[in-house]
Image 1 (cartoon, helix red, strand yellow):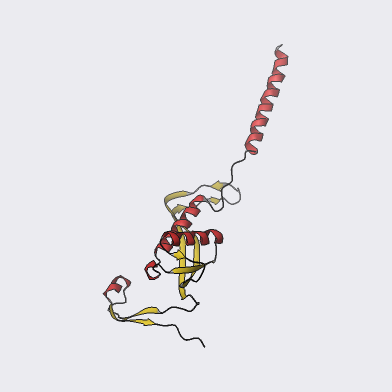
Image 2 (tube, one colour):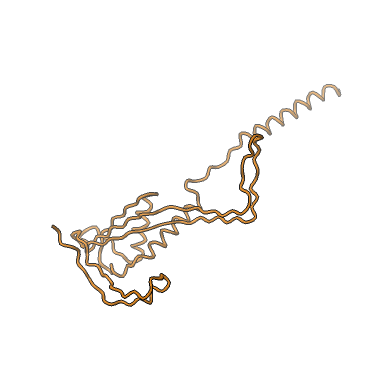
Length: 195
């Protein structure tokens, strides 16, 4: 009986080894979403920060019509998010006879990746074609979301509104001391007349 069990054991071991190798080579994993989750977080947070910088006090409670233009990114989502964010912060979006027309452009909407490495980066060794791992004494990886908005306000007919300008006496051109500059006068100037 012993001679017959050896071929059976060898066949069973070969079958198990074959299944194990096939399982490893055919293993499937769930693909990552596009864009990645951290990228989505960076984008939405940068969009919220940019919207937070908008001065909504000048709009007041007047009904407005809103147009949103997106240069890059998920245009439908950005438009819906901006509209909802403005409504949540007290802006009345009106379809009929608005007092103001707001035109908001999302000029920049994306992420930046920056990396600082002190050490040896990973590389493929020449000739022998062996990968050499990264040896980092110091490594700093930084991902940032970037959003820039441009907002223009027009009256209900689509004409530009009067804008406020400041005439300053510059005490210092150093940006840290910009608050030391004195305002000489404030001007409210209408847009040039249509030709």
